[in-house]
Image (tube, rainbow, N blue to C red):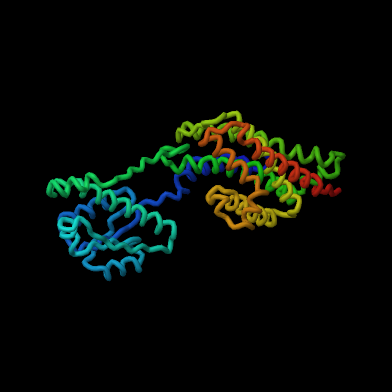
Length: 364
């Protein structure tokens, strides 16, 4: 491990990138949406609505063009993401009819941004409508005010379980820990062994009476130890940097990590067994890492995937540890609750490590 100067550097750089950079950069929370407001009314209430949108942390008021056509040109040129059009009779309708409407156009090339942006706008408009209702009730005749007060009203009080602050980092950091273990205990052993093949140093082992099982263990145990140490550091760093601590048992987190480390390291040995040089190993690593991450439930729920993708996810060790860590960190689950996932990881570990031992061929 230390004969190759690249390996220790990668062991240090992986945790730094994954824990210090990724949680801030990789997020599905949409902010800084550029919006144009076409205000045909230009009265008190329309200006209040424009100011309310501009003060939101989700939106940046890009422009207030004079007409819809100009705003649409801005969207076509990529200068704005959304257009809100306020009609000329907006204030008058609110005062006389106690109701009005606004138009909204959304650039949905980015479907996620378009959907969330439109939901944000509707929430702002609904809040604005509630504020105006309270103000306008004081100007109504007593009979009208009494009739409105007698109308049935339903209030929804949401209670967010497991992640009350809706902090997306809390959801992603357990997945990033799994990614970190995959890189250190699955990818680095493969690259290390293939580099020894290229340098010819592995031939010195091939001509000795060391059997295949001892050879595989000798190559994996150092990375198992490093992976466990990195996991302990990751748990501590997540608490110190983000205030994230397992609501379940921290020992269950470490035990689950050990089972996964043994499982994923077998995949690394398999990759090295079928690679003759670094170029081949790099292509295989890129192929498998994409499958592990994108079909492991880290970003997309398994239930939302098509049937063929779910079949791949069910044999993906990344899937089970990601689910396990999120259960232990956010749901407060116990070791007994995640035992089914750990059992499946154990089966995968036996299969992958057995395949690694069988596929290794000593060449003298």
